Image 1 (cartoon, rainbow, N blue to C red):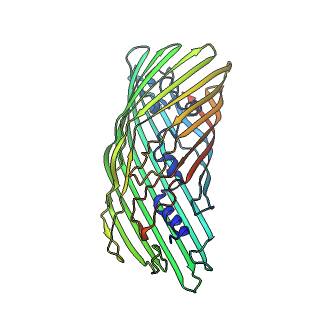
Image 2: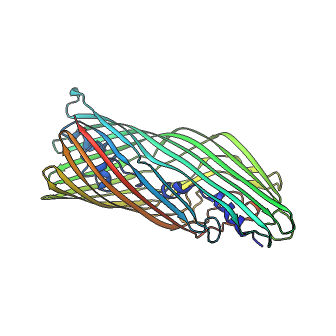
Image 3: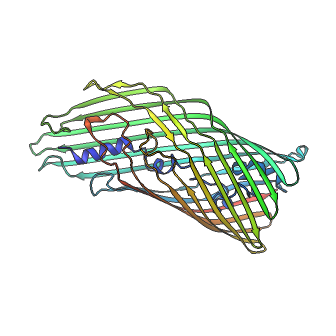
Length: 454
């Protein structure tokens, strides 16, 4: 008979990259930059008016009348995630945290000799997740009359930083083009750990220890080009982003599985397991794809409507960590511990309203999508849920001297079911009993931003 509590916990351990990863690995519009752009849901490809243009549309920068420095939103976000029955029947795995918002710092470089041309630099956090989820305490024993206790820890620390240099020039008084060269550095540290003990009815003791730890760092170059057109009251824009060109990457992988005293297959005999491997200096890779964006805005008196959309192409299956297969010491079975990923094409869109409330005050409201690029039944071990996320935002802006101040909030939510993506060795013949579990995600961002016109 299957040991339900241990199957659930072991499966959780082996398939879950961490709560943050469920909602971010395969979602591209999970971060926005610049408070105004964030409150408009990123619907600014054709209407960006601050230095977040280094990211949204570098072609628009040369159309700006004044140089500026943008220090992106200062604020915090509360996010929560729940995996129904994640630690066994009737026991949900939950995670919540309060953390600072991702950052963007961007500034034009005011060189008079550039004339109609413009240079700018930017540093932004393209993706970030830092979370841990724990489940401790007694559970139902596998042996009637016995007692059992477990500890499960899932940890994921992921970040991707982009540093960019933007060049933009005017083709005319109404048309600007530009390109940003980005150096993207991605770092991820994933660790999962399980301790399970049981005293059987006959006094025998069973124990299982399972540790997986994978870490990698990868650097790549990519380029984002754009065109901005100002036909006031109509503005237009379009962008294209290249795939990344890998520079270098390295990582490591640890698998350490030990179990004694449990009968996984129900044949009346203990299934003792020992499988361990540590590999360092493993080649690491990370790939991104082509994307194409377009947007527009139109002013109807005191109301300006913004729309944007972006198509992100798919990513073919690849190995992030190209580890060597190893042989389990107890059984002689060959075990693969590759970290892999693939993604399907997605199209995201956003709508925003900007309403002039007075000479120096504006109000904002928006809706945007963040459809998951996760593939149903994917071979990816980096993404385990195809979770579409939706964003609703609103706020207000004020002009004080040479300062533009803006504040607001954005609520994001999504739900999906875990897939059966058990790619590691099926230790002890355990099936992915979490397949089909509900995953819910919620996040509230409260933000305050400002820019200074030079």
